[in-house]
Amino acid sequence: MNIVVAKGLTKDYNGLRAVNGVDFEIRRGECFGFLGPNGAGKTTVMRVLYCFIEPTSGDIEVFGINVKDKPALIKSQLGVMPQDENLDLELSVIENLIVYARYFDMPKRKAMSVANELLSYVELSGKARANIKSLSGGMKRSLLLARALLNNPAILILDEPTTGLDPHTRQAVWKKLNDLKARETTLILTTHYMEEADRLCDRVAIMDQGKIIAIDSPGHLKEMHGGNLEEVYLKLTGRPLED
Ligand SMILES: Nc1ncnc2c1ncn2[C@@H]1O[C@H](COP(=O)(O)OP(=O)(O)OP(=O)(O)O)[C@@H](O)[C@H]1O
Ligand SMILES: [Mg+2]
Image (cartoon, rainbow, N blue to C red; front, side, top):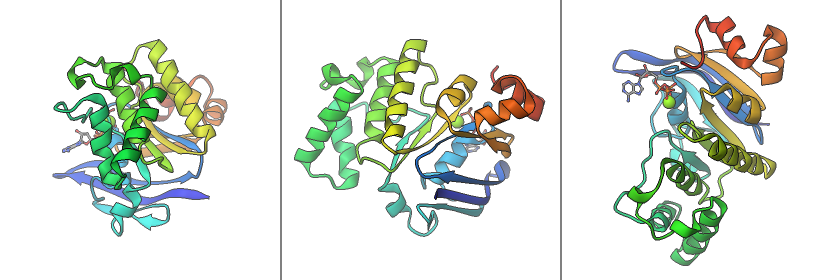
C-alpha cells in the first residue's frame, strides 16, 4: 500500500525550478531513498513532503491526504531529521526534546519519560543536561534523530542522516535505522552516499537537476546497468554522484 504518492510535483524558488515534475510512490514500511548530488532537489522534495513548503504545481499525498489540505494532520504523524541542525542553542539536550514534545500536545510527565528513553536509545543519556554547543557534530545528529522519534512517527524523514559522520558513527546510525525499519516505520531519506543507499534502501529514486531519472531497487539498478551505484549514476546522468 502506498503511503506517499507524488504526481507532477514541481517547486520553483524565484524562477529557479528546483524540482521539475517528479512522480513517485512510496510504500508503507519500505526504506525509500533519494540519491543525487548537491543541488539535485532532494531537500526540496523532503520539505514539500513534510509540509514545510507548498509545491508550485503538481500534487503530493501523504497518508492519502493532500499536503495542501491538512498539513497539521500529516505533520503530527511524521518525524523529521532536517539537513540543517535546528536545535535550540539556549536549551539543554533534554530540554530540546521536552520543548519539542509540546508540538504534539504531550503532557510534561510523559514527555520527560519519552525524552529519557530516546536519549538512552541514541546513547546521549550522559549528556542530558549538557549545553548544545558542547556536543560534537555526531552527537547533534543523534539528538536530531531522537527528536524526530518523539511522536513515534509512522514515517521518518531523514535528510542526509549521516553526512559528516565518521565511519563508526555512520554504521551505528545505519543499525538504528534498520531497527526502526524492522519495527515497520517507513523511512524516507536523502543521501549522496551510494553505500548508504545500498545498505538501507529497498528502492531509490535517482535524482539529477530536479528530475527523477530512475526508481528501482539498488540491486536491480546494478544488475540492469552493470557496476556499482556510483557507476549506474554516471551512466544514467553523465556525471559523478560524489565529488
Ligand atoms: N530556499 C531556497 N531559495 C532559493 N533557492 C533554493 C532554496 N533552497 C534550495 N534552492 C535551490 O534549489 C536547488 C535544489 O536545492 P536542494 O536543497 O533541494 O538540493 P539538494 O539535492 O538537497 O542538495 P544538497 O545535496 O546540497 O543538500 C538548488 O539549485 C538550490 O540552490
Ligand atoms: Mg539537501
